[in-house]
Image 1: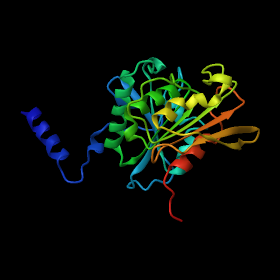
Image 2: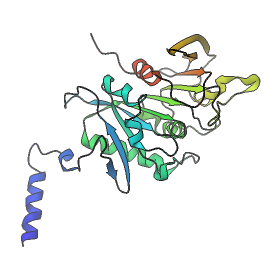
Image 3: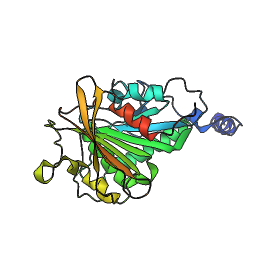
Image 4: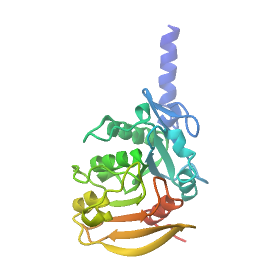
Length: 269
């Protein structure tokens, strides 16, 4: 009898006005991972959020042997999302390694579940779902974007690709990629004559882009310059950029923030 009364009371509370689904979820965020079955993800909230306005989301796939908690504490990832009003969401791979080699890995479904769980907890601006990744996580981000591109406002990847002849049935609208010439862990794909633009051939083909252009050299940080290529003569609303630097396998300082500034709608004033 007590059990029945208890269940009725819980049901009554859940259906009271003002009691949201988010309040029934186990609290998480920061160093407390959010659970989905036997897997998890981490969240880093932006600065000065009013608690009401729908949030842009950046879902970032971590590197090999890392996890979501590493991402939210990374000085070149979380520090770029917080001041821009973007919620950072960082899924953790099973056994710390993404399975991006297949065309339809289980991790795509897990990433879908992460975004759905986030939307239960917070108001999300579904028109501003961005995806990024570094190293193996970059390759996973490519794979996810090929499957769920219609949901993605922009893809920003660093030091990792999938095969350029991979099937990409549903590409995103905007792609930004950066890679080092000296990367020995995930080599920069090159074509005939060491053509570095081969690194984004998959996207150029998917967007039916014309000939790209070299826009020169941009200084991202003291001592770090990137050669900047642009393809904006593609299908309507589609574009690709490629930044190539002389360094190795790392996330360039300031690169992610620069891409977010270019992709996010400009705020008035």
